[in-house]
Amino acid sequence: MFVSLEGPDGVGKTTQAALLAERLRAMGLEVVQCREPGGTELGERVRAVLLDPQVTMGDRAEALLFAAARAEITQEVIAPAVERGAWVVCDRFIDSSLVYQGIARGIGIEPILDVSLFATGGVLPARTLVLHGVDRRDDEPDRMEAAGADFHARVAAGFIELAALEPERIRLVDARGAQDEVAGRIWDALEGLHP
Ligand code: TYD
Image 1 (tube, rainbow, N blue to C red):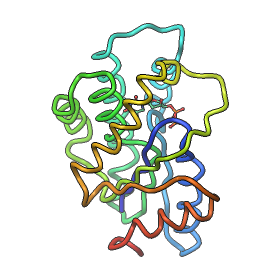
Image 2 (image 1 turned 90 degrees about the vertical axis):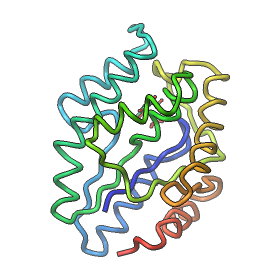
Image 3 (image 1 turned 30 degrees about the vertical axis):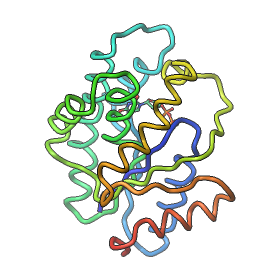
């Protein structure tokens, strides 16, 4: 079973991905946790380039680099794990590209969806949980985080817009409140897929 956690920067996805993985493991399931961009040798190197504030790049190059990292993690990690029946919990996946590059950068959802599906060979999460409603960013901004308040407002609105386009796969989860409350909402949003 493949699920992804999504949302704007600083919404607490990483903590929640770990809590979800822990809960599934406690049930005796094999869980593969990953993050995007990254998770492979190639992906981690591409990540370093993508997030480096010293590197300038056009929007299309940026979109293709995210897609390249995604192609690799899908082939090396995600597809084999799903194949052997493991749970995969991925911190960001295709929907980050649809929102950050497609909507916020203005390339458009359609071309980014085409590129991303080419990258993954059609692999999509069975369920995507979009966290929203808080901003807990507190560290030095990376290249993406330094993109400005307007950009990040488009990202936040973009995730809501995207969720409305694919309501069966993409579920909005209120990220306000205590960690365990949010974890409970995430669990509930996996209805129909529970092990
Ligand atoms: P990361 O440090 O993983 O951010 P977070 O902890 O908020 O998930 O950095 C990933 C950044 O890259 C983040 O700003 C979102 C952005 N991103 C895209 O723009 N497109 C993508 O396809 C992906 C996967 C991430």
